[in-house]
Length: 297
Image 1: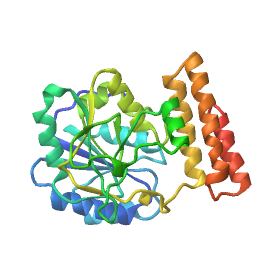
Image 2: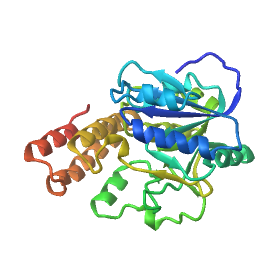
Image 3: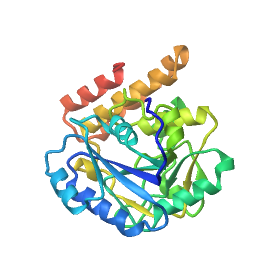
């Protein structure tokens, strides 16, 4: 992702990707403008071809927003890259449309980042909350054969087992609220455009890790993430599974080679057999999902 040099005129550029989430986006933007007082900021909304009247409503009620029409559904990563191309902020805050800021989270991220420059911070995130104020998915581990086997035996670390009262270095922070220096994001090429949705933040932060940058969840910012709200339906649908698995397959091909890839793929095919017993999909849907696991695409 190559962009011409741009003059930094804002401390933070907030990038939000929208796809038919008009009401959620309006609530998110209202919280942004209500809560942020400690930094200069701009909000860039990239619309992925919404048909729910988002543009008319948002531009009327939030005229400060920079509205970017993607011209179709580019997916999460490419749409964010497009928004970053319009950004002038020193830092980027990549925010989901199904989030609500409960305090001046952006200023807290900014202050933390500039006061920890010596630590080579790559990405910051917060301990996200669900609609009831309980801990929500905020971070994760890079996928490995061991993590797949741990999942199979029910040993994956859950958010309620983490100490959400302390800062924590993690493999990756969720893409729902990712704070990163614009120069670093651009130097790394942004999100991989080959990934339509899911695992784009994992891949980006894997590249950060390879270059020695820290990824950290911090305690100050408070943000509600209505997980799945942007899809209009909670829970794992076969469509979401297929989309995520295709991205996962790509991630594996990108970061693993030879025998390591063969071993990983074998473990994955074993673990994903669970779709036949843990989902409420039809048998045809389960077969469709598992064929994606077996494929390379």
